[in-house]
Length: 353
Image 1 (cartoon, rainbow, N blue to C red):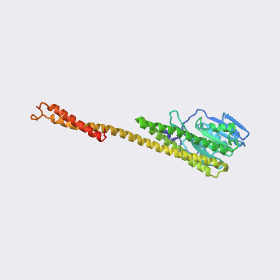
Image 2 (cartoon, one colour):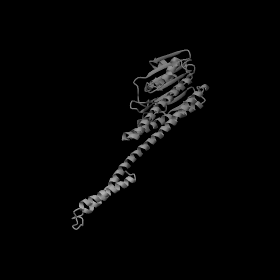
Image 3 (tube, rainbow, N blue to C red):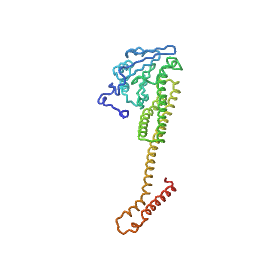
Image 4 (cartoon, rainbow, N blue to C red):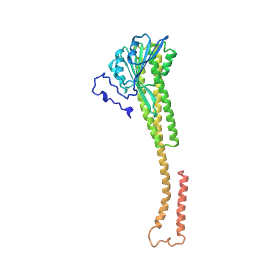
């Protein structure tokens, strides 16, 4: 439930723009990497401190600064001071419970996107990725090391495609596209888990199966919360009038928008399937209970006339005609056996057995 509860107690009472890290610290030391390139030049370094990134601000080439670990407030503050980032933007970077969004600050654009992955326990975990797009730079902020950007890095290193021939806006698009494409992998794995759970339902539903369905339902709620706002982000970016987004990029943004719509449709379909699994589970358990009750009812129905006969001859009256009859005991047994047999034949014809 921690993923659904936003804890903002650390910010209570503080003025807007106060820099406080809200969230879980996932790294001990901040890792800073810089990739600077154009069509003919390429440079990649691991920065020992944030000051190493400052000379790239006025570089004519495209610069990608990636920061893994946002718990060191002074590092974020120094970088924001160098690139003239608004304090409210820095505040949003440090708050890891942000909703996916886009903000236009004129000289730069600010994006918040959720990057999803499966944790060690098989539960979906979301990492907040903040992107700042400037005229010739992209700054990405992540909570910890490990991301889905390796394909983008390889394209830059090997000069594949048009990424080295384009500007910083194309780099920002490539990063967002990598995050969106990773959603398809997440949905595929969830689909496989749904198929496995459905097979368990048809073979032998257990309380563990219900637990799996409930977990899947929570995962889909969490996934929907992360994906739905992304459509608004891409749509705003495509229809915006920012000078940082060149016209040639619109066709690529429409492609990302289409992928986002496909993801949302898939999420809704999987949610309906999970709801159907819950209905199937309840129906299966109900049918199983009905079968048990039917068997018990049949046995009770068979023994009702037998109990009636036994009850009559169990009464303590002295003058009962059959008590002293030689064949009375065997006759009573035959009557009871006949009654049971007739009822079994009747139930069989009614297909209750």
